Image 1: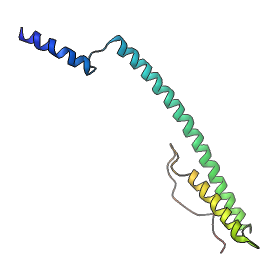
Image 2 (image 1 turned 120 degrees about the vertical axis):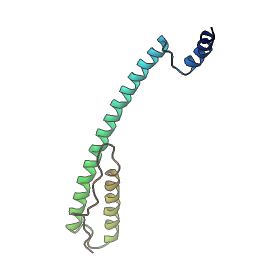
Image 3 (image 1 turned 180 degrees about the vertical axis):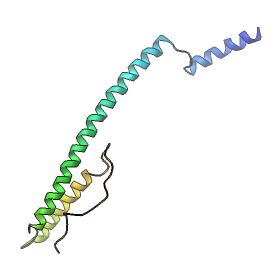
Image 4 (image 1 turned 180 degrees about the horizontal axis):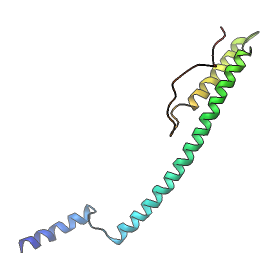
Length: 116
C-alpha cells in the first residue's frame, strides 16, 4: 500500500520532469527535429558562402601583392595608394579569418611583400 502511494506521489514529478512521454511531447519532438534540420541546412549554406568569400579574399590578397610589386604605390602621392592597399589587404585578410568549417592557415606573407 505504501508503495502505491509513493508511486502516485511521484507521478506528477515524473510528468513535470518530462519523464512521461505524451502525444504532445512526441509532436513537439518532431517539430524540434524538423527545426534542427532546417537550421543545419541554413548553417551549411552560410558556411559555403563564407568559404567562397574567404577564397575570393585570398585571391584578392595575392592580386594586391602583385599590383604593389608592379609599382602601384610608387610615385607622386604614393602614401594614399599605400593606404588603399593596406586597407584592402586588411579587409581581405579579415574575410579569411575565422571562417566556419575551414581550418585556419598559418600566416605567411609570401607574395605580399613591401617594396620600401
